[in-house]
Image 1 (cartoon, rainbow, N blue to C red):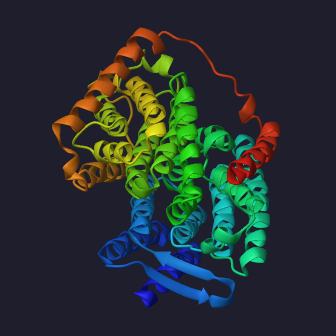
Image 2: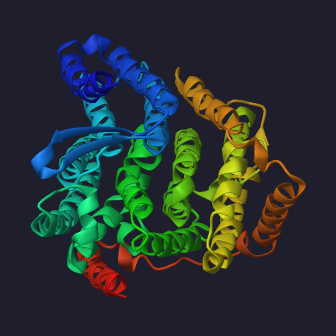
Image 3: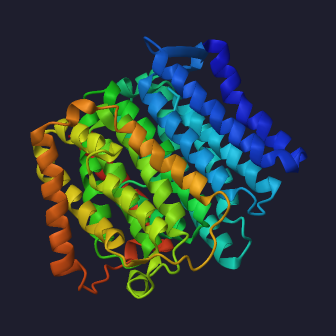
Length: 477
């Protein structure tokens, strides 16, 4: 398994640059890389115990592969495969597929890192590949959005790198285990970097503009898997250290409530999905022990929603109410919306039940409010008007991509069959019903727009500094 792991890590980068030399084969090679990751994830789930690889013992450069890694790797594989299918015969160049493959490989690397320096390298490669994909259209707008993302990301990584150096200074190792002996400022700085990369709480308010203004397949990749590169280390550290777990859970609840507070009022489809991503990442962090399964469910749902939203005639919910959408597209939107709302027979139901059962008492009220807000937000999609006529032909790979993602939601629902009890079934029905009622009575008629001040470029770096101070206080406490 050690040799297989090393080959699997290097394979995307070798194939990625080969695809640039063989442009006609680029889509096939990208799809093959995604399939290889799916196969590797299957091998990971078959392991009886975690696999650890020591690369540089003296520096604590370590790789750890376990079931938590398996869920995240499988998410990356399925979302990447769906995006490649969506882009099939769309005229994307070999350069686009090169960046897709490199992004896929570097995201995979973050899911098996157990040290801060390897994680730093992987996160920086992710930033560069993501920037090139965001700026791929080469329009003034896309280049500005990409540069904004790159600047915020690199600034966050400076905080992170200083924290990693402090960990090494305290423990003579870059391993995650060194956090146990690290000073409080090291934990605060590392967590600031990861919270920004993961789009968590106030530090993640770069995310709505970036995800909503990118091309449809890029938005699906960013929201489905890329932001999880920052979330995974937080989950891993929460499971390793009892002293850090409460901090991660606090930010999980904060992110869940902040994201959904914006999502319920948002009138733009892609911005609503982006704010929902912030909220759903909060669910992953609120219960770290089951975060892997929730991350898989969220990745499939959000990628499907972004790809389907890209097929709508408008991004404005107001305009969509006067432009009925094709019934099959509405069906895909409805299935994904039901899943993220926690409806039975879809993996979102089992993920939410597992998460709610793993919450601490002080988290319950906040996370139930976030679940209610999710139902309100996605009622906007479910109650859109529909029609039988198809106004325009779909991309050749659209239904293959969406079918793969939605099929994954049905297949993953069998992971936690124990969730199907009367008590567990009643709660999501009540939550969804209350959400729909609130949508019709209040939010459908509300034209309130929340301020975007904290999303502005000049405030994003300042928020990082404030978050570092808050984290330092929380670690000391």
